[in-house]
Image 1 (tube, rainbow, N blue to C red):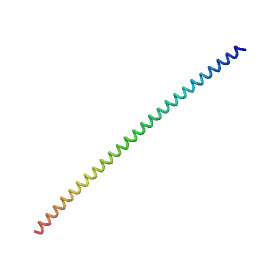
Image 2: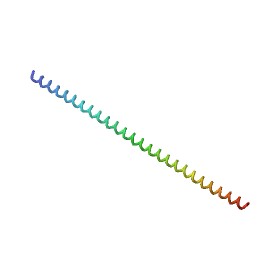
Image 3: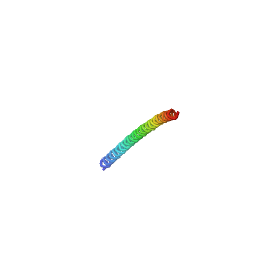
Length: 93
């Protein structure tokens, strides 16, 4: 009967060891998954920030171009107005 108890105890120890090993492996997998998720989150955040920066730069370039066009148009109209005034003065004089 002693041999049966020893075998049962050994089987119990092996089962306990296997369960501990499986739990450790599960914890390792959980940590690896957590790290991968964090890395993916950081990449997504960096990508979003880059897109935001690019959009902001494009919008600023468009504002600058619009202001430049406005200045050029204003200058052109000013010149034409001045020329018209001079012609009117010459014609009147």
